[in-house]
Image (tube, helix red, strand yellow):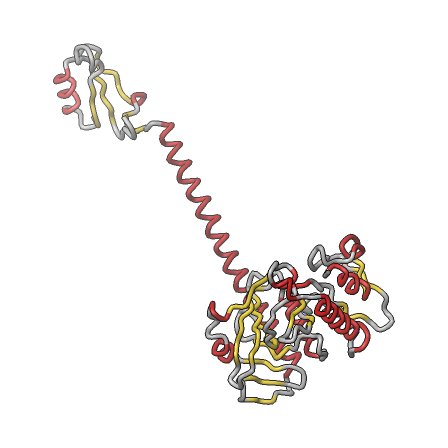
Length: 337
């Protein structure tokens, strides 16, 4: 019978093999030290007598007892691991939150500490290079990031159309928590685009770092990106050779500017078609400088062990060995048409 406990007969006293059960009972009752009695032959004649004195040691089914102990052990180990994992998760979450907060503070200090100018029009704070928008302004502009305002998405997160209080239309690039584009790339993009001004580069209107998901606010370009035309059977017909030529010339001018004519010599490193935006007149504007690198004026090339970007839009020497230069950006133009 399951979980049934039986007396330990090794501690019993053998009284008789043929004593009647009533005599066995009487013998036990007459002795104050008797703890229990039992007949020996239960099946046949019900005779014989065993008597236990003092405390009775009980034993249970050994296998079931071991199984119970194993179950308790497993539950204890699993519970302990669960607690450890939970503590580690909470610790990492808190650490990530603190790191993000410190990063926000560093970014805040980098751009407008000691140079703040309050600008109530559009809900922003600006310095000579870049405007910082408060979260409330962005939420209002994008209708709380409604699906109707969603323009697209990528590895970085989502892009939403918005309209500021002064009527200006903008595109809000929202960096998701799980984005492949990290905070350093975000900071890199803010630093570079804020210092660059050219008709073939997308204009950075400002950014917002109040939320856990930092945001970049660009000028709104109604025709979206070049890939939406090149890889669409219907839209591709719009790109006659005249338009294609004008687009490639505009991209080349933008590249020439960041390579030679700007205050900084910059290698883009991610000139894929989805990063070429088109305005209402189909003029191209280069965007997404998160992976860009600054070069010295006399520097020919650089090498990195971290290969980033999009395969298919990389020069062979960069994809294979991590070496990149101004030629890396120029070579990508050949893959557009």
